Structures are given as C-alpha cells and as structure tokens.
Image 1 (cartoon, rainbow, N blue to C red):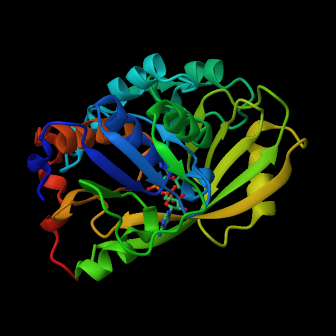
Image 2: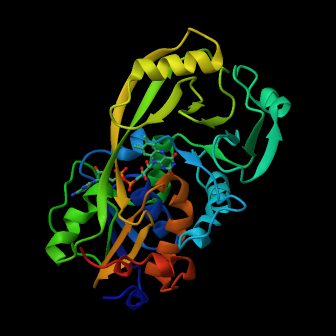
Length: 322
Ligand SMILES: Cc1cc2nc3c(=O)[nH]c(=O)nc-3n(C[C@H](O)[C@H](O)[C@H](O)COP(=O)(O)OP(=O)(O)OC[C@H]3O[C@@H](n4cnc5c(N)ncnc54)[C@H](O)[C@@H]3O)c2cc1C
C-alpha cells in the first residue's frame, strides 16, 4: 500500500519500530495528525545512539553549499521552535555556537566579541563565526517528552524481527533499520558509524556557548557536565588536557566515554520514504537536528498523502541497491 492510499475513513493505524529521537518524533507528529500509533522498542526509549548524542542544533549557514537536504534543513529552526511551544518537556538551550578553524561562513566576529561570549576561553581566536541561533537539547529528555505527548501505545522490551500488521509500518530503528529491510529484499544503503561522547565534570559556567574549535568541540549541559564528541580511539586524558588548556582550570574530571553507533546513509543524506507497500523508512544522520523538520513531513505524507517536496530528493530509492 502506498502512502497516498491511507486516506480511508477512520484512523490510520501506524506502527513505529524504534523509540530513538526519530521514532518518537514520528510517533508524536503522527499522533498530532490523527493516526492511531503503536511504538515497538527493543530496549527503552532513548537508549540507542540518541543517548550518546552531542545534540547540536542548527539550520544551514549562509554560504553553505546546497545539497539535497537543504530544503529540509531550512525547516530545522522553525521545527524546534514549534516543538518548544507545543510539546511539554521540550527545551532548547539557544546558547549559540562559536566556530573557527573552518570556513568563515556566517556572522564573523573579532576577538573582543569572542572573549565576551566565552570569558573563560584562554586562546582566543582573532576571528570566529558566531552562530547566534544555534542551540542544543538533552536528546533523551526530548525523546521521552515526544513519546509522552504522542498518545501512542508503547511496547518497550519488544524486539521486532518480522514486520507487524498495520496500515503502515515506519522503520526508525537507527542502525538496525537496514537489517529489518533485508527480508524485504532491500539493501538499505546505511552503515554503522561509531563515535564517542565523553562527559567531564567541571565548574558551572565554564563554557557558555557551543565551542567548535580545531581539535576540540565542547558544550556544557544544563547540569554542568561538559560534553565532548570524539572519534573512536581518542585518548580521554588528552581530551581532558585540551579542556584544561582551553579554559584554564584543572578542575575537569572524566565521568564517562561511551560509544554511540550512528546510522550513516552512504551518501550522508537522509533516507526517508516508502520502501515497500505499507513500509516506510526514516533513517538519517544528524537526526537530533533534523527530527522536527523530518517528522512533520513524514506524518503528513503517511496520514494525508501530502507528498513533501522537501523529501523528494531524499527517497531511499535514489541510491542504487548495493
Ligand atoms: C558522539 C555523537 C555525537 C553526535 N552529535 C550530533 C549532533 O550534534 N547533532 C545531531 O543532530 N546528531 C548528532 N549525532 C547523531 C544522532 O545522535 C543520531 O543521528 C540520532 O540519535 C539517531 O537517532 P535514531 O532514532 O535514528 O537512532 P537510535 O537512537 O539508535 O534509535 C533507534 C531505536 O530503535 C531500537 N531498535 C533497534 N532495532 C529494533 C528492533 N528490531 N525492534 C525494536 N526496536 C529496535 C533501538 O533500541 C533504539 O532505541 C551524534 C551521534 C554521536 C554518537
């Protein structure tokens, strides 16, 4: 059954597989669009890679080379503002981001402004890009808030091995989505991409924005924990020393370093759309950023048959089956 065939009378029944940020975002938007939603989760909501996310949120920057996901990315900030307004428990910390060492795209500021924004920063760059409308979230808190607000029936500790019966099944199982597609004869072009989130205890107020500097990306969560995404194999003591040098305090202590396995489409772009009659996939990198923009369009497609032009170039069929 194609997405457009679901406009029969009565509520569309949709089963979502996976309760990470993507599955819960889709469940929330489907519920809002009037569907009867069931969520099946192998473990507990927000326990997949979503729990290890740096969760940086931002729209496309002025001057970014456009790609097939640009129309979707343009809806990132309005989408998050809408969720903040509508979903109890969704909070975005709009602290902005400072980035240097890369292309100077966006509002370029000098050392004095950088110092004002990050007073504890030692080695202040002469020029940096200030992304004032960027922010971050607690990805697990948001995931759970969306699920609560979705009105969905939720079955935790329920691992799906064959496709359940429903008008539509949405596969949002992160890195495991490809495995669920395999029995349908579909080799979804998405691969596991591990990365590490390190957490450090530090004095409150040490980092005020999100700092993206050569060799160090860091933000300070609402509870004071410093979050640093790294590649697998990065030495935690070296990262700690970098933080100490960058912010001039010895009072930084490693709490944990956990691997998260990101679902990475081979061309880096989201895979969103039907893959077989009654089966729809939603897999993407930077899914924290993209979740509200993507999920609203996905729900409109499934419930109302409204084909989203923003998703037209992101269909799973665009890449050759490998
Ligand atoms: C270090 C790091 C930094 C990152 N930084 C950012 C960032 O700054 N901004 C950003 O936007 N993104 C970032 N990401 C990426 C982001 O975290 C992911 O894109 C996002 O969390 C993917 O969400 P998901 O719902 O697809 O996957 P998941 O969170 O993994 O959810 C999938 C769910 O499906 C369940 N599941 C799997 N198989 C089954 C099954 N057979 N039956 C039932 N349930 C099943 C799993 O248990 C899991 O709960 C980062 C990731 C990492 C690791």
